[in-house]
Amino acid sequence: MMRHPRMDDFFCRFLVAEAGVAVVNVDYLVAPRVRYPVAHEQVHDVLAWLTRHAGEWGLDAGSISIGGFSGGGNLAASACLQTRDRGTASPRLQLLGVPSLDVAGDVHAKPSTVSDPMVGPGLLRLVRATYFRDASRRAEPYASPLLADSVAGLPPAVVYTAERDSLRAEGDAYAGRLDAEGLLVEHRVVPGRDHYFLDGDDPGQARPLLDALAAHVRAALRGGDDR
Image (tube, rainbow, N blue to C red):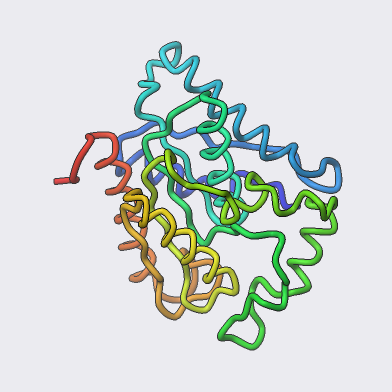
């Protein structure tokens, strides 16, 4: 529902500086102008297009990674499923930060340890009523990646969830499924934080997380451990 790509501009610039990569910050249409699966297909199409045209930009098609936070994590995970199923791209890595991975389950079954969570039942209902409006499609794996029949063949993944986030359980569960397939690079639960963990009163906590994410990107592009 929210369209403001520049909110992640700082993270994109950080990866450029610290991981030595080119970053494409993907824009997409939002509800109520469009409904599912428009944004999901747009993100897939950008990933597929970059794979086909990487050489025109001086990029390596075999080194493309994808990631996102919150709803962006949903879109990134969905794009990886779509490219696997359609054979349109083979991302090297997926970075999923506090991802929304199940839009079909009971909104009241997503508890938080705080009384007024950033993502509560009201917001979840609003997202579903606007973008995921067709209830019969919410359990599709491209909408709810956690519900995919199989995660085999997906890119290796870094999954960061937050201790107090109401979406933590689905992120933890997806990390577990990826781990069972040998695809989990790291799963980290950020202590003491709600849905977002790169802001707040403790910059000493955010910087190490940013450094770790950049290190994972560097390592993935080098095909091994970051040293």
